[in-house]
Length: 127
Image 1 (cartoon, rainbow, N blue to C red):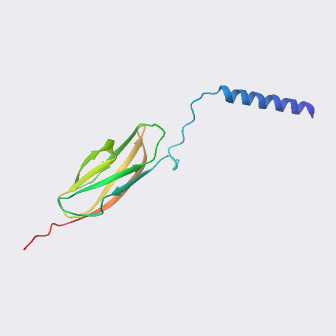
Image 2: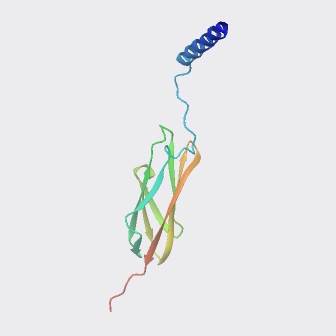
Image 3: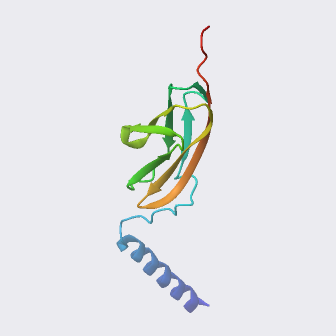
């Protein structure tokens, strides 16, 4: 029994020594870790009039220094981005209901997506 204890202590000592000399770079979390990844779209309004511009902000969580990119989509609308893609200004010329969506990429892989629905009302004519 005493021999088992000595072997166990030697094994634990080697494990501790290896832990101290291991590669200092931490293992990065998997992309599926919701605590590390986030993308929430927040529009300035969900309703607008034809010809107006709506602002949609992408709120993101840190991905520990990864190269992050956001791609925006607004079929039927025109998009201009600011602040490294975190702000989108969307303009619609026709009434209807549209979906503005964004996909977040890290190191070239899609990690998150979100969408908001925008209702575009016709311009009221005076008369």
